[in-house]
Amino acid sequence: MGENPTLYDVIIVGGGPAGLTAAVYAARKMLDVLLITQNIGGQALYSLDVENYMGYQFISGQDLMDRFEKQVEKYNIKKAFTEVKSVEKESEAFTARTEKGEEYRGKTVIIATGKRSRTLNAKGVDRLIGRGVSYCATCDAPLFMDMDVAVLGGGNSAITAAYELMSIARKVYLVNRSPWKADEVYLEKIRDAPNIERLFGYELIEVTGDDALNAAVLRNLSDGSSVTIPVAGIFIEIGLIPNSDIVKDVVLLNKNNEIVVGCDCSTSLPGIFAAGDVTTVPEKQIIVAAGEGAKAAIGAYKYLLKEGEHAIIGY
Ligand SMILES: Cc1cc2nc3c(=O)[nH]c(=O)nc-3n(C[C@H](O)[C@H](O)[C@H](O)COP(=O)(O)OP(=O)(O)OC[C@H]3O[C@@H](n4cnc5c(N)ncnc54)[C@H](O)[C@@H]3O)c2cc1C
Image (cartoon, rainbow, N blue to C red; front, side):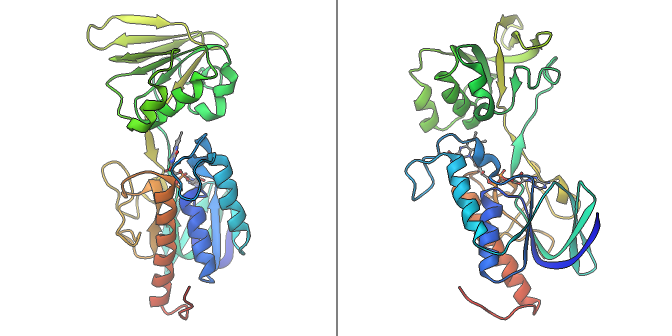
């Protein structure tokens, strides 16, 4: 517990595609790197099939992240598996405080904390999480073999969830308030599925069941009537929110709570850089996050050079 005496060149928070790439780039600049993360892989672990990461025509998110991890292992990158609660500037360095009360100090910090699922407040939802209500189709879909399920949402995550479930569940209700906003490439995959019933213009108002979910109550938004669909599973895929709380008081966020970054991944506070889904950079994709992670590490390296800490090493 308490303060760790090492002053790292760079502390990277987050072990998804952005953070792992930043770690490799920073280590190759001979910087002293500490990676603090809750897990290795981030959201990419939830992608059953990644078809748009160059060099792989098809690879699962898990396999791709295993390869990222192996590449990280080749370098002397220190790791701490925990949750960072805050990052603050103290004298000339930054301090990252964790849930366990540890304090780590760095000359620079790269925030690569990504996004998490938006939660839903409908009646019964919290009580039945893990008992039929899920926020992760990739994790929980196999539990619903030959059962009827519902997916809430209309973006890429929801359509991906429906795609995963259509070959496992008996029937999939795809429920959304408005028409789907997913990319055409995802919609195409479910277009002819005989076991997907599309219900748009509905919102979830309640889930029912004693020990386990047995039904979802939906409200028709055009006439206010309600309909009950018997389902054993409900997958809530209604969007993602940035994990930017840890720096909300020290760097500028936009109205969606994304960290505002320049094209070199710098933030409003010199010395703090940010990369990937947690930032204002458009297009939340693995390849974009990885590229931004590389830029953030180079940005941190150049910042340190200007501070006179390192000689130029080159690539
Ligand atoms: C279901 C699904 C399918 C997808 N499919 C594809 C696809 O096919 N192709 C594609 O290109 N993209 C896909 N994406 C998007 C892609 O996964 C993301 O764009 C990418 O993972 C973002 O990377 P990131 O490193 O910025 O953040 P994340 O992947 O979100 O990683 C964030 C990391 O930070 C850690 N973290 C967060 N907060 C803290 C904290 N306070 N302290 C310590 N650690 C913390 C997390 O544990 C995690 O390791 C998909 C996303 C989902 C949800």
